[in-house]
Length: 149
Image (tube, rainbow, N blue to C red; front, side):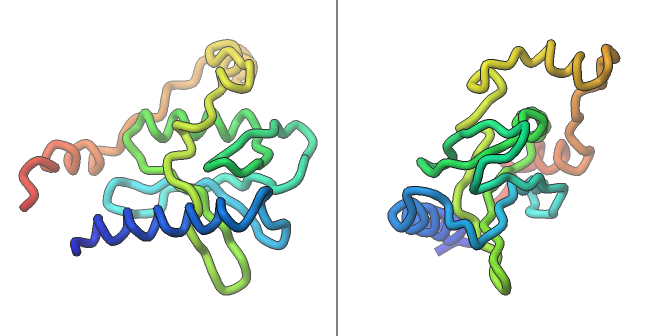
């Protein structure tokens, strides 16, 4: 079994196990959406909550309720647009486990009832920031993807 098939199987089993064992996310853990380059190198992460929080929206990732800031949802959209991979991670003492893949496809600013352009303008005080651009390494990796054995 190749490494990518093994990772895919592990993700599927982990996500299925998580969903089957919990109607809601266990409160004894921390949860993060993690962004990685296509080669698996860490970029950044944003914490999300298993309980309501001020200025957080209730959403569902892999059929499990979480609470997330609109700025985190915008960040996931930007990272995905830049070609980066996103995962929802459950972090407990001594263990970090992927529980959900592609969270950017499950929740968008539009799902929260937020207009993306207005949100960006409001976040930046009226100044439009440039969108996240893909790194040179990720662009090069993408170009050579079809040449892998």
